[in-house]
Amino acid sequence: MSKRTSAREDREARLAVIKAEQRAAERRRTRRWVIVSSVVVLAVAAPTTFVIAGELRRDAEVADAAARPIEGEEQAEVAASGHVPGEVDYSGTAATDADRGVLPPIGGDHDEIPQNCGFYTESVRDENAVHSLEHGAVWVAYRDDVSAADRDRLRDLSENNPYLLVTPYTDLAAPVVATAWGVQLEVESVQDDRLEPFLVRYLESEQAPEPGAPCSGGVGV
Image 1: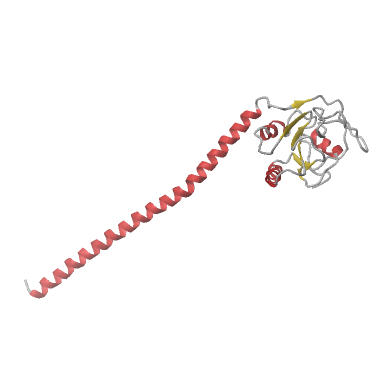
Image 2: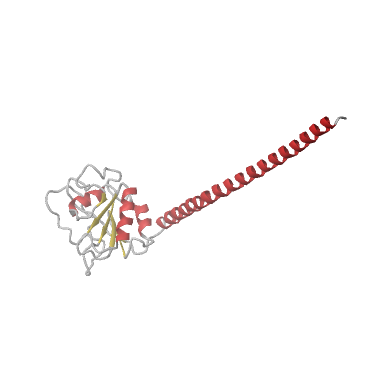
């Protein structure tokens, strides 16, 4: 074998080794990329999975609480539900007598036009709000001095529930009062665990005389 042939074979052998090392390095880089990518995907997906699982668990807990008696809930029979002009005397139409303040009416005669459901920063007429109750709305009244966080939470709830009416109420007996047709619940904060079960139970419920009738197309927002 000539020296020239031997040198060429040596170069080819070294080149083959170099190429093999390059391929091995590329495979290692590829594996690292796959592992890092998988870790990133898991890091992103895991919190999302936990959030979804947590929300589902909380929804189930709220639904379970809504199916059982709600502590502090007061019910009363509503004698009338007609359309009348002008103002209505709602004295004695709350679920309980509140000597510490005022409670919204739980039903009765009312204006022929309902109050559009949604979030309000100013008071609305009882007569229009009661018409909304007749249609299956839940009316959540709040004091002017509730926290900004409670206001934001009430706004969020109203945006996600087309039959939720949220308004301030002058001289309210409790910081927050939730009212459906014939039933009422007083709570100290929007964070009270009883509020959302109350909404689940009574939004568009058969408790109302006309559940599912529009809570839009009336007056207000």
